[in-house]
Length: 203
Image 1 (tube, one colour):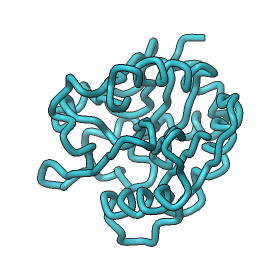
Image 2 (cartoon, one colour; image 1 turned 180 degrees about the vertical axis):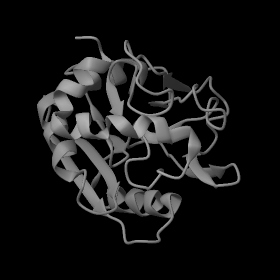
Image 3 (cartoon, one colour; image 1 turned 120 degrees about the vertical axis):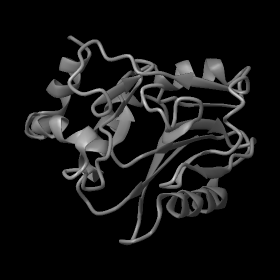
């Protein structure tokens, strides 16, 4: 069984995430869109998600964490991850485009067998979460940004050609200089998310 859990602040991303998970996941799965109250820090929400998973998963199950604004965009995503998991402890997004996250596993997408232990840690002044111990890049497979068409250096990213991450989807970044120029594309995304992602892939 494939268990997918995603911490959600509000309802904005629930339907679009559910649509893409259903479209690109061919095996049996359970999607848990875990509600996060206002004010709860990201790492605390992730830790709660892990506790929820432990209630249901069996050792031979596969676990996935997605950010609320992330989902698969490749029908072979589980097959690709499973191939790497034969040799690696887990697979995850590696945001080499972000100075504070280029060497660590980002929680917008992490995939691992339930039989293996996974924990979260924080980094930087903002105490952003990452997979604990991922500074050792030999033990995990990192999926790097593979956009064919760039709209913004940090937002609207495809990783490993298997996962889309909108970036900062559940927080207000309108006052942050590094994100402001990218916000002009929000209308295009919500008008047709599928078309928008195909544009990033130059399809």
